[in-house]
Length: 539
Image (tube, rainbow, N blue to C red):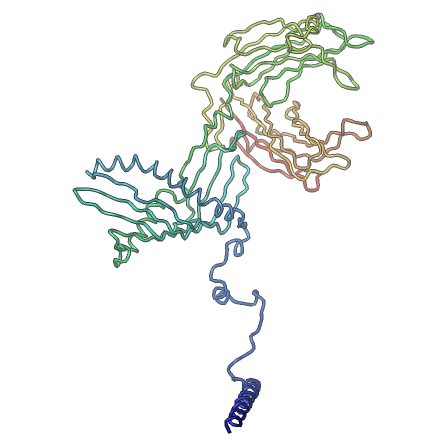
């Protein structure tokens, strides 16, 4: 009997379990609730703004605004470096705050103010995106979007009148949109002289403040009052156009300003050595200040003459008379092939007496190596008159400032009523030659021509070369011709020079505005552009 009961009990349980599964499945399939609908999948473009806000509570700036770029790499860098940056920033902040605290403790009769703990926490700030502005000036402008919900722990212990109070700052949140400007850009590391920081809008600052363990921000009205005070105080100091200036280096140390003019008169040469196998040489002189990027100045060519006379005068701008030297090279002009050097010599500017004309007769050398035996051979003499005239103390150009639009005065010796036209060739873009693209720039003004160096195989060359033209009167009705030309490769004579485009610039605006810095579309070029800066300097 017991065995039968056991079997029946087991069979009943098995039957009931099976029946329950079948009935439950039937009910799930055939008795679905009527209020459940199949969701519709739609593209994001078909949703309205409120729906998008519900699905995506915080949309990055680089999604909403195409002007902002993603900088996930920078956030990753901050995440990896934050433990070290935290210690460095806290140490620097303590060093800055210590003398300020020491000064105020005496003023308010406080015994001591000490940092018990000072850490910015484990959460680094996050950059939601960055906007970069491209200008024609020597500057770099960036506008990052900064958000920082950190967990800092800054505890300050204040002792005064026999009492001790502990103040703690926790749960700091900062949302800010700063503008960071690096200028002027200079050719020495870190390649900028100053950092200018300003805020484009009032920042959002939220934090917790505990005094003796009690949360002060829980006091009604104090939280909003403290927020508004901080916003207004920060805005009054740094809201654009106000800026915080952080000097990095002295720009005058990297970019030297003119301090005088060197007047050189190439008089003649005597007893030059014959270079041509047939006939006499055709000499001319190239003169240049060393450590100067400006191209060399040249005399005219005297054909078939070993004792030529030039009597030609030149002006060179001096930036450092203690270290600069005047280099003079005599060449034999050749109609075909490379011009052959006939001799060289230099004059140290520090050996010249200011405002005193000195007549020099220089022996031409093979090279400037005094130990070279070849320099003992006679190569002729070069006679010239040299005068160094430093600027007067009141006429010295000011140090470079962050405002690159400040125009210097023309140097002494500029004709009264006239001035100095300065042309700066910065760069060109999208140049394209038919057979080659080795560009250089020709500048023609009132019949005088100047050229930049040529750059090999470059459609986007950068020259950064400056040229000067002395004018007897303001060039109000004149135009300056700027032409970009491609020089053929050195090897082979298959191709000739190719014009890559030109532009004629009216100078009336330069005279009235003192300075223009524009990017011009080149005529006879498909997409070529060139950036030219023009300055008009008067005494």
